[in-house]
Image (cartoon, rainbow, N blue to C red):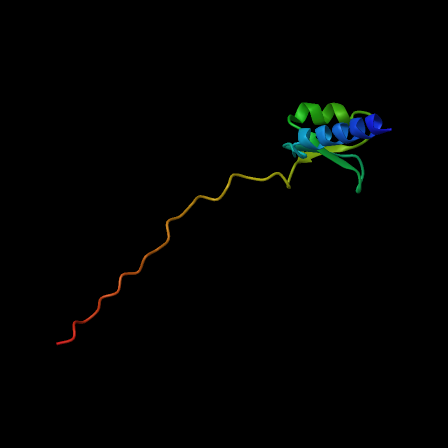
Length: 84
């Protein structure tokens, strides 16, 4: 009874360790108003997917862009008068 349990736990752990998350690509295939797939890296891949289904391809608006440029904080220098 222990061996199947240990095997199931090991399989579950390896599945969790191997997942890297979903990656959005540059192109989305829209099959209708509610069904789309944003997993295409080229326009041609997207076009082949929608052939015959009446769908359309469009740029992925949800694809993360480049990170914003880091700006240095502005330091304001104060001038103090000396007490005499």
